[in-house]
Amino acid sequence: MKKGAVEIALAVAIIIIAVVGFYSNVMIGKQITKKELAKEIKVIETINLMEAVKRGLPYALYYSFEEALKRGGYASFSEVQDLENFRLNVSQIFSEYREEIEEKTSVLIPFGKINIAYSDEEVNVSFYSSGLMKYKYASEELSFEIFDNPNVTIRVKKGEFLEE
Amino acid sequence: MKSIAIITIPILGLIATLTIVASVAVFFYTVKYHLEIIVEEEYDYNNAQLALLSLISHKYNETYSMYRLISERDLNGFDEDMKSELERLIKITTFSDCVKISNQTSIIFEMGNCKSWKNEGWIYIFKPYNKESLVEKLVMVYEERGS
Image (cartoon, rainbow over all chains, first blue to last red; front, top):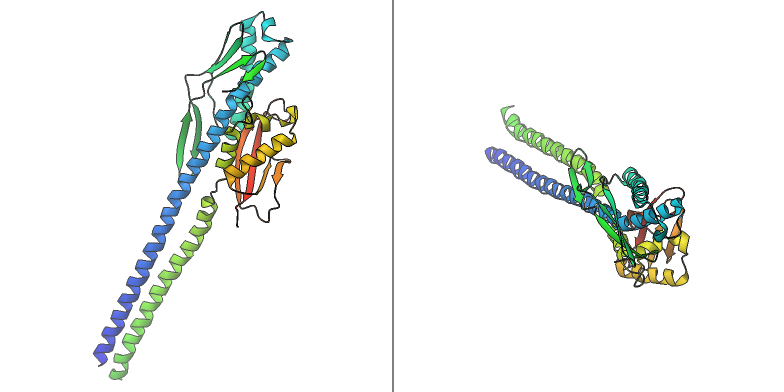
């Protein structure tokens, strides 16, 4: 009878340990899954951030074009005589935006070249870079880099930006 | 004396076992408690950022985008037609009747009377001819229907 009590005590102890072990394992497993999801969410947020910056590039390029006209004292593009100098001015203004966006968002827009092509009807302004837009994230648990193509071309007709 | 020891030893053993198990359980609960706080902070994802991105990607009309409408509102104005179109698109993108869009200093657009701002998301947009900065942070908060 007394021997039976010891066996029961041991059995109960084993059962308790097994139950607690199983429960702990399940709980920790859930936490790890949630942690992985949290990492994915950070990546998604960064992709959205990059996409918003990319969507702003055509508007920034148009602004650079307009601002270069304004600073050069031109009423319209047809008045521009020194195209190379005008192109450099557009490039400089666009670079100011590039630097500001990097400072505010940590999204790096690479150096690139402004090209301007025109006909009687339309002016095409392009930003071309062989590099990629980049966002780098690093923490103790997660690090990643996201890249995107920064190249953009806008069409300007009679001073108006033709949105695609 | 011997018979007392025979009874006492299993009881002590059981108590010791329970103590160890309880200690382990408390340890894991403590870890879980702290993990949950961290996870809750990181896991608090919602649709607001995506809704905001979707909103600026829409067209206002054939020649003008919602992006431009919002970013150039100080230059070109922000009339009732624009606001009603914005409201229509917000309802589509957020499924909410209660939304607020703001920058870091002021409210740009607000509709509904919210009790709580459960969902929050932000993006950066280009803002032309702005003296302070060419980059503006847009923040959207909204309350889910039925919350």
